Length: 157
Image (cartoon, rainbow, N blue to C red):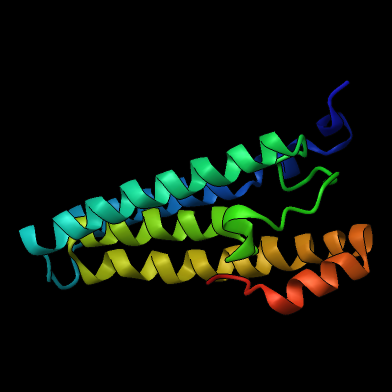
């Protein structure tokens, strides 16, 4: 039986990847329809594309660690294992870090100042709407093990 059946549909749909997609659409709109200040060219598109690829690789690696530990990736489900190895030894939130990398890479590819604004908004949304609550629930689930991990591992990098 799926654990999401008890979660209202509005909360099931309020997941970080949907926020990323929304911000990418906003970047496209502001860059194409309302370009504020253009700064980009080929010199920003290549690093932007490389950042997107590297961020996607980080996300895949992070999700594979969840799957290897047989713990849910979905932020609304209760974790069964505290991940502290691999990429999680360097960042408590590598998937969110990867999402920000995709957003920043896209902003560089779009090459407008307006495309950078949603990156900052996404950072705030991820931290305020998701990470703080998730960390609270993880602390309640894993207690001292979580506190020791959080004390030695940065939230982002």
